[in-house]
Structures are given as structure tokens and as C-alpha cells.
Image (cartoon, rainbow, N blue to C red):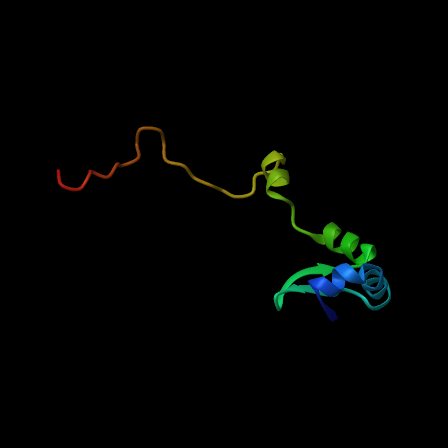
Length: 84
């Protein structure tokens, strides 16, 4: 995996894109810190297909995700404020 400083990536984007397609993922750095990765579209689609569901998908799904037990209403104990 090659590393590209952001200035080089911007100035030579076509070359960066060609390297990504022919050699695989390319890392872009900003001030020496790895910031982003450019990946071929086939790799992105594979990763996206195997990714976990999003929070939105989980919340909208019909399936229960855990056996969460909640205390009956009015039965929960409350803490008394300090100093009373």
C-alpha cells in the first residue's frame, strides 16, 4: 500500500487513481498522519456488503437484538439527593 502526502495526491490525482486501480488501496496523509484511503470500487462494494448493519437499520428492524429486562413502572428505586 503506497502512501501519498495530500499535496501530491491533489496534484497527481489521476496517477493516484491509476495506482489504486492497478496496485490496490492507497493511503493519503496530512501532515504525516494517515487520513484517508482510496480503494478500488470492487473492494469498496465487497467491504460495504459485509459490513455490520447501521444504527438506523437496527432501529428500524423488526427483530429484537437483546433480551433487555426493564423494571416495572414505579418500582425503580430512586437515589436520595446528597445532604438530605
